[in-house]
Image (cartoon, rainbow, N blue to C red; front, side, top):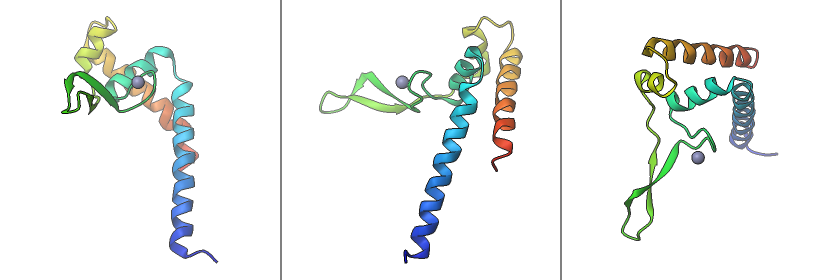
Length: 109
Ligand SMILES: [Zn+2]
């Protein structure tokens, strides 16, 4: 019989996997602009979903680019990027998108 702690860890791992899968599922159902804005606001790559990027302007002692966390964007910058007149519009759109994700996750937890 496996130890209780390993059972709990594997349960937690499965839960985590399931939650991530549902989360990205809900994210994928958002409109293109909503997905783009959430990536900017929360600080992850729109293409590969990584929360890091390679900084080719900042090399380590081996000449390799340093891995850095993607900085979350301010609502004002997101608004400018999407040609909205105010940061508030960007804020509201992000909140609406997050609400859709919250609703999709609600029955799970
Ligand atoms: Zn990427």
